[in-house]
Each structure stands twice: as structure tokens, then as C-alpha cells.
Image (cartoon, rainbow, N blue to C red; front, side, top):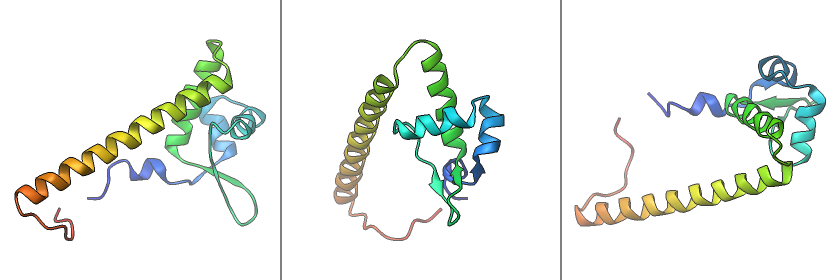
Length: 112
């Protein structure tokens, strides 16, 4: 089986469904996009498509806004988390490379 969270990242949900799932208005959802907190894909016709991960993020954003956190603070927090995640990914790859070198493992097709 593939990556367990891959379905969460597929942009297949319309803004109307996102509105129903989150309780947010379309205006709020578009505002969070304008503030660069959420990044939907666009269809050829210009319709927004969201993922399940986007829906979770929107709920988290809405909760923070309700708690009085400003959108620019949320954006800064998101950028900081992304930077940390990128650093952890680089570190993981370096460690994996060192282990592979130590044990003579060559990169090849994944065998799952």
C-alpha cells in the first residue's frame, strides 16, 4: 500500500463542501487564501479544489482566529513549522544516507 496520508493531500474537495465541513463562509475561506494561509488548486475553469489536509488546516486557522490570533501571526507560525519540517527531512535523509553508506545499501526501487 502507498503513503497512508496521500489521500489527505489530494485536492478534490470543492469550496462548497469545505464550507459545509468547516462551518466557514466562502468569503472566510477565500480570505485565508488571500492571506496565504491556504493554497487550493484551481481547475481549468477556475474553481478551487481543496484537500482533507486543507480542511483540517482551515479548522485550525479558524480556531486560532477565534482565540484572537492575527492572520500574520498564523502565517509566521506556519512558515516556522515548514522550515523546521524541511530541516528535519534533510536531517533524516542525511542519516539515511549515512546508514546506507555504512551498510553498503544502494538506492533502488522501494520494496514494500
